[in-house]
Length: 187
Image (cartoon, rainbow, N blue to C red; front, side):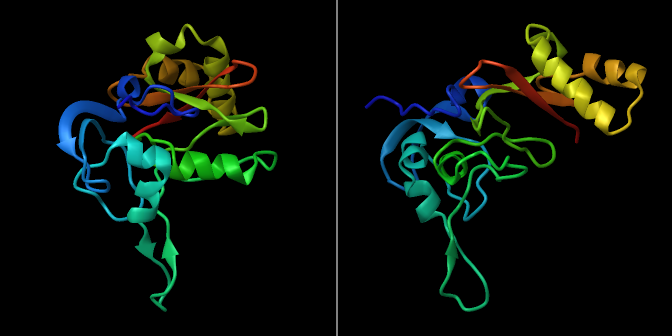
């Protein structure tokens, strides 16, 4: 059976959110060859396949009890819905949080949005990877400017970005206009 495809996370293997290894999924109990290794905000499975994320079965199966009454449950999510623009439909947020592999960050990872939709997560990036995406670098510079960073400090920070270390950036692409986007994170 072919692996599922994800609109908002086109290559979970390349991004590091999944790894090729034989395992039995803790949700569907089937033998699988690709194992999810990103975050799960809910009950923790022993092992999880991409098929169960794609179908929404993982989000439902890994739900947690809510409140004190014991009756309500909260579906597990793979990414938090943080700073979602008002023009992004709830259906997009639900697809990203419940049916798309997330990605691990040093702090709280956040999905990026553009053109009224979720952006596609391409993976962690260092400065070398970002050089081919000037729009993404400009976005990081603007973010630092809003925080009051001096230009020289920002440039030093950007040149220190490391795909596998810290600080790191997370590269996204708009699905509509192909604009490159990025966020940054430190441990």
